[in-house]
Image (cartoon, rainbow, N blue to C red):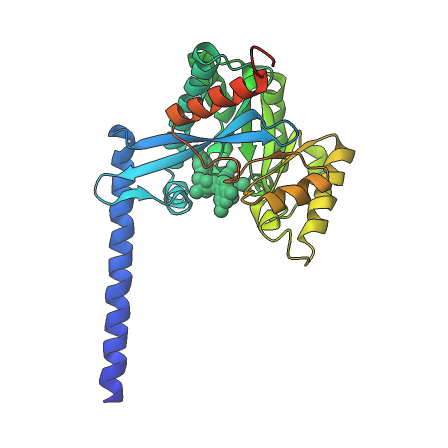
Length: 291
Ligand code: C2E
Ligand code: MG
Ligand code: MG
Ligand code: MG
C-alpha cells in the first residue's frame, strides 16, 4: 500500500544516510591513523618548458594507500581532511616531506636550485592557521632546502576569506624568498583587483580550459586572455592537465610554454621521478662525443 511504501522509502533513506555517515566516520578514523602508520606519500609531477623539454620543477601531490581499500582518490580524501580539520596536521607533514624531497633532489640528484622549483599545495584551512608562516619556515629550516626552491600553490578560495590577512602572510613568505602560484586559475572569482594586490608569481591555467581547448567554444580564447593578463601583470603562466599534443600546440600558439600533464608524465613516486629527471638532464646535455 502507498502508505507502507512511503514508510519503507523513508526507512531506506534513513538507513542509507546512516551507512553513509558511518562510512564517513570510519574514513575519518582511518585518516587519523594514516599519519601515524605512514600511509601517506607524495608523488611528483614534472613541470616542463615545451620549448626545450626541460624539467623546470615538480608539483608534490598527496597519495594515500588505504591498508584495506588500496589507493584513495585525492579529490575525496583531501576534502575529508579539510572538513575534519586533520589537514592542519597532515599539511604540516606535507610541507616537511616536500622540503625534505627538495633538499634530497638538490644534494643527491644534482638539481639546480635556481632552475628548479618544488610546488606544494596549501589548503585554505592550513593557510588560515595563525602560525602558518612559522610552520613553513620551520619545515624549510629543518630540511635545509633553499627558500627560493619552494613554491606554494594556493587557490582563490584562500583569498576570499580575508584578503588583508592573506596578503600579510604572503608578503612575509615572499620576503623569505618563497614564491606563490595561483592554482586552478579561472575557475573561481578571479577578480583582477585582488590579483593585482596579491603577490603571486605564477598563474596555473585550470585543466578545464585545457581539456576543451580544441572544441572552439571559447576556451582557447580564455587561455589567450589569461596569458596576456599574466604578461601585463608580470606573472608567469603554466597550463595543467595537458594530455594531448594538440592541446600543447594551442597553448604554445598562445604563448604558454610551461606545462604539466600526462602528455609528459603522470605524477610519479620519488624514485621514478628521479629516473625521469636523470634522462631529461642527459638529453639536455646532449651527446658527449658529437658526431
Ligand atoms: P591540483 O593541485 O590542481 O593538482 C592537479 C591535479 O591534476 C592532480 O590530481 C594531478 O594528478 C592531475 N593531473 C595532472 N596532469 C593531468 C592530466 O594530464 N590529466 C588529468 N585528467 N589530470 C591531471 P590529484 O593528484 O588527484 O589531486 C587533486 C587535487 O587534490 C589537487 O588539484 C589539489 O587541489 C588537491 N591536492 C593534491 N595533493 C595535495 C596536497 O598535498 N595538499 C593539498 N592541500 N591538496 C592537495
Ligand atoms: Mg596544485
Ligand atoms: Mg590545479
Ligand atoms: Mg584542481
